Image (cartoon, rainbow, N blue to C red; front, top):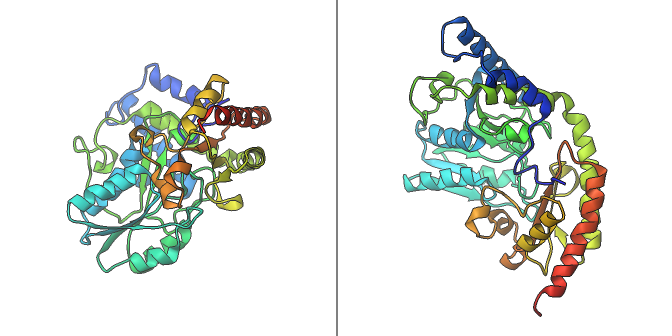
Length: 379
């Protein structure tokens, strides 16, 4: 029972079927001028259009990268290197790729304002507005927290940034294909996507850049991807990402309703059966539809997850990208969860192959595991 879709989403077989010819031969380099190269270029441009349709952007603005982390780096570092201003506004709960980019900018003399969040992990647009300065070069706010599921008010923040003439970057990895997000409606100038979070292959991501927004490239070479990301394009993965984006756009509404119902039953059932446990992040419509997270006192998350794994359940305690540090989650700290409480943080993210039987099993397994571990804990 796989309930860790926020860390890695299995590739949809329909995506694999389209990718297969690009892996088995008979495909040229998109930069070549012979017929196979021209066919490859057409496939690349087709994927670009499919990805852009997911959020209503101009296809020419899609820059394919190796990952969302690279896309975030290109957005923040690439814009900062060209901007006149030396100030960046972001939030305290961003993905580590955003936060570490901002910390690196601070070493280069930039000022960075890390705006706080409320107890649900939601950014106050008014706080962002007060943080803006005459030399603000960029505002970067995530569309949703992959760790606690809270949706952020990107439309309101985008409007404020547009009124002040400040470029607005949104890391949309967790939200794309799951909640409505249109770059024009939300006044977004740069948008980050991940292939794998759309049930596409890993090794591909994208940064959409609004026409007129200029960046300094991070990778120099042959000038691929409009000069922003040199290197031969990973055509099989990019084609797969395009198919995955099309499927998410076509099937998203029905899938979201299905997952939301399963998620609500899972989260309500866990809170009912686990004494003293509490949910983290927003509830209801303010939360990603596939996301359930909570803190359980009296146990260590690592021990719970290990026992669940032995029972055939894969889940997590938060972000896979920061788990290796061993430090308490910066997201949980930002919403006021103590270090001790954060040790019992659990996160279940549902996906395309999650069914009612998985929820039933987890609702029985988790309380049994927690009860056993609490009995074994020293008093």
